Image (cartoon, rainbow, N blue to C red; front, side):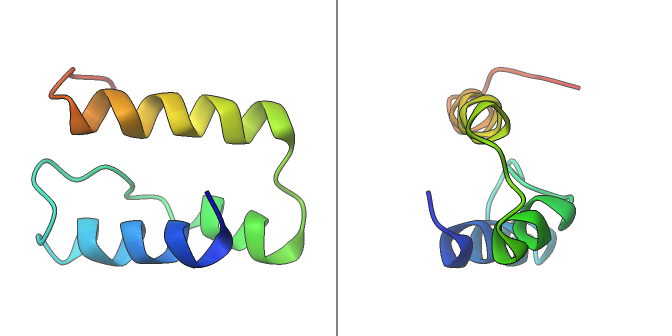
Length: 59
């Protein structure tokens, strides 16, 4: 998952295009753009996005 993908997921989520929204916190895209996103954060974020896309409710 790259910076542009995170940005696109965020924008599509907050616009309502993606239902359910999978990424509603732009901090993740910002961290990726700055090169501050760690491997463990990316792994966790990927798991959360995948779960949300599958309809698994997460808080």
